[in-house]
Image 1: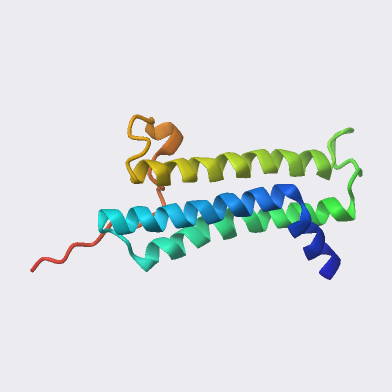
Image 2: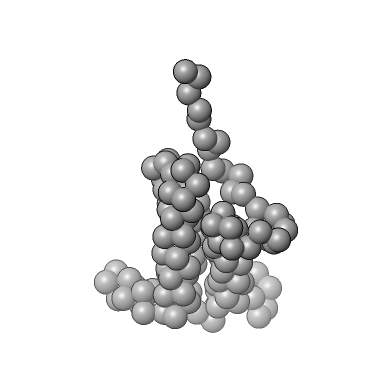
Length: 131
């Protein structure tokens, strides 16, 4: 198990994904503080969506890849290496979109269309007290 974790965290794809996650977290917190809308629930939502929803499943595919690298799954030529690389592209695109959204929240990418950097649909709306 230790070799699996070492291999996973030594992989360049994992390092890039974790760098994107860290940058997005920092920029998201800064954007929340600047806009006066920072809440810890956003950090929890971020952890659920980006870490548990993207990085952890990628780890599962990576573990399967290390176990059976070039074993065809259903279609000849479709093995865990192909699936893992496809998942890597999707995870990277999702993390980059989240990072662009954080930059947009900071006011750096105002002209960017919502299809590239729209709001996270899982984020709770800010609550305003009626006082």
